[in-house]
Image (tube, rainbow, N blue to C red; front, side, top):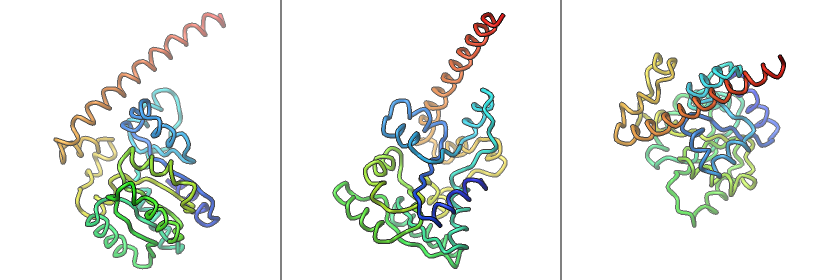
Length: 241
């Protein structure tokens, strides 16, 4: 968290573009079939781990991981930096009502913050040039995008180089949580990596199939990876022997 926040702060200070993407199990699985999503993740400057499934899988294969950095926690830390150092965020996405409630909650918590602009995510394709112009004219120091995958990735693929915003980050459903429309999982469930289960509890009709599908596919990928690793190990041992 500390390292990511500092890199974002320096990018905003020096006005050098830095794109952050949060990686969870669903996104990792969908990258295999969605070329735009894969390109967005691989092409980002920082790939943050926003899912305990990814953390545990990496550790299983011997890759050192310091900690999980949840997107909403990083978003809140960066808002604190904006309020402290005078950086101006632009919030893009969610419904108009959710966006306004979240913006009011942010302004109430950080009285000194200056929000560069607000735009809901329910704009038509032909309105995209106006949205891009609004972001450019705002001269924002950071852009937080609360649009669903893959719409967010396609928007950035088309306009990222024109926006002129130093720090760019997708924040998923963070505005729904901050605006009070969605409750976040209790801390104990967060620490156990069970936030997904709490989402299913809150929105069973919408979420259960998504998580059942992606978690099953991810488990299959892990099993194949472990079998491949086991197969490579004995071969290397026999060659060295």
